Length: 374
Ligand code: F6R
Ligand code: MG
Ligand code: MG
Image (tube, rainbow, N blue to C red):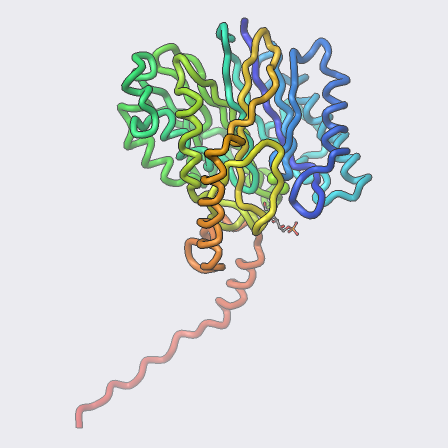
């Protein structure tokens, strides 16, 4: 059957700063969606990662569907009212427009969707990251779908071996969706040349070259491009289909053992390592570290199994310890050099105003007269 997987997420308020939503907020969003699901959704699952609430939905209405997007938008509005009532911090933070206009894209919430031909068994992974931006998935996706050092399936399995097509977006372009399509392995170095800069070039989707099927959908919105000012990091969600014609679950998960440095963390303005965490984890050290959770599902006739927590297995405890060490090591460097993001990516404007004021106080020293030899 043709099935659509849609995940829409937003930060609409949290307890104790930007840490985690309240139970009441989660329940309000869940009840709102549950009450309106009949006739619209085949199934849904509500979760949070850090301060973001995600609504994962299955249905048959295709991607970008107005009713599906409106349901999520209205659920977030209902949640915002509950967040305001409780005095939660940042209530309604990601709802950047006053009225709904057909699609939540460009309105604040992040969206990842794909329409698929449901396989007899359809395993997929739902990733959610907090305190970082969509480029955080660049390296893990490159390794999983294009690097044989990570994914032996690329040489062991004939279908996977035909490679994958990457759709990459230039998220700095605010005039529209500026994209390029590149094939791995033929154009591997071109792909790498773009993915080197994860703040600008972001993988939007990945497709099987053997079957034409979509494997990955990433939410690529840039909040600061919508709002024109700091409104929090984009905290991206992602859907990845696994097994058979796609990399195995373990090949998709393996790159998260690196704890690679991503943009985000405190005030959305630092470089910190990405920590794989268990489902429904909050935020702590230095308003971070940036975290990523992963729920594995099988979906059958649109019905979801319960989630399996991909990062709860004991292996990941060692990774978390390593990432915590790496995070503290970087923090010893404070505000200097690579510890902070470059000027163009800083999420607060205070420093630009300061530099402008200081710029006026700079003087060019007069040339000293040349000393004559005695
Ligand atoms: C990062 C984040 C936090 C806040 C910080 C200051 O995405 O949400 O690091 O930037 O806690 O918050 P405000 O400016 O809201 O007091
Ligand atoms: Mg967040
Ligand atoms: Mg937030």
